[in-house]
Image (cartoon, rainbow, N blue to C red; front, side, top):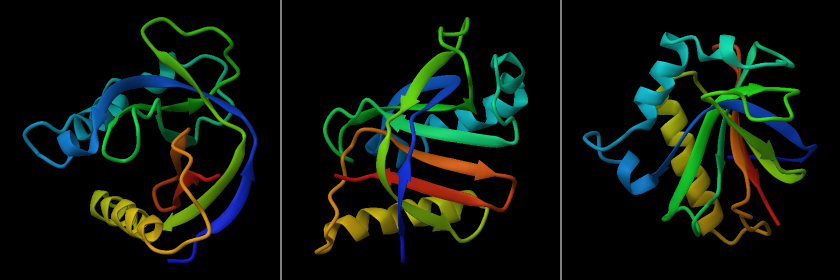
Length: 154
């Protein structure tokens, strides 16, 4: 796994959100994220997002971390938006400006995304020069086969 360090500017993402944890998501009976992704597309949430900057790029933003990867966090699925006020029935989150390690997902499948997240956890458990910031992390979906995961680092 060879992540690339990238400086990211602040971005506003609008979409639907929920609060969860990796513990809940690891159990198929309590996992809510797969249903949220399904609903995002099935109910065409994108159509309700105002001032879309690029409707072909979908974000999954992890934020409001309780502590680290073991605590609760919020997840917002949405699009980059020029909105400055929260749209009705949706949420807004700011991707924080800063340094991010970018991990490429090798295949466009839920299994490959999960495997990449597991590899990211392992990467930070090793003796790396980077420490996770637990501010905002995000997935970027540029079409069906180009997926990257951005991890905020100190």
